[in-house]
Image: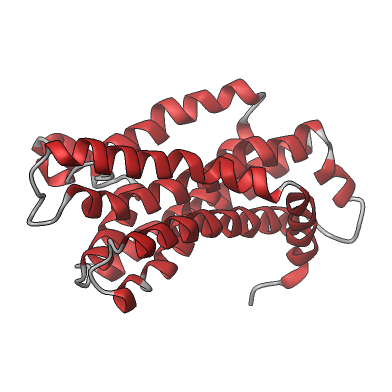
Length: 253
């Protein structure tokens, strides 16, 4: 049974975020929306339809997943590292009856909550532009957004636990996040990749998020829903488990 002792940590982060909510939301939204609108309208006019679908519609689902991944990753890397290492917020919380698992659970769900906002904002743009084939089917994106946020929040906390400074995060972005964006099917069908590269892309969590999200935008049910959901959940839980172990070892030094 899930312990709700993490809620004060989540609430603390929410109250701090609320003071800077507007610039924070703009920062989270500007990049993915520019990608979707710029590439979709600009590059899309030069491209033929993809499997009978205009490029902007094809790009929409990938942009949702990309935005959710970025939001959860930035929150669990830069913001969580500031609270853990620079501001010593975690140390202050650990002087209360709360334990380290409560702190990490609060950070995990908080990052997923922020990524949910990012995903919802892109989804509103999709609805506003009429890019979805079926409105009610596109509501199925909501659990995909939540699961994708938890997945990348768990992975981000694990990287945060072993990072000595902010510069270390560049390794994660260069070696993990950027390849996922380029290979995960955000901008083009992953099926167009060479077989060996497609096999590698199939191991990336973003690939599974996109394979769940895109059919829901284009008006048909995804194939292998349980498998894709299992992979995202497994990455998220493994990341959170590693974060608990590595952060505890770091704080005990």
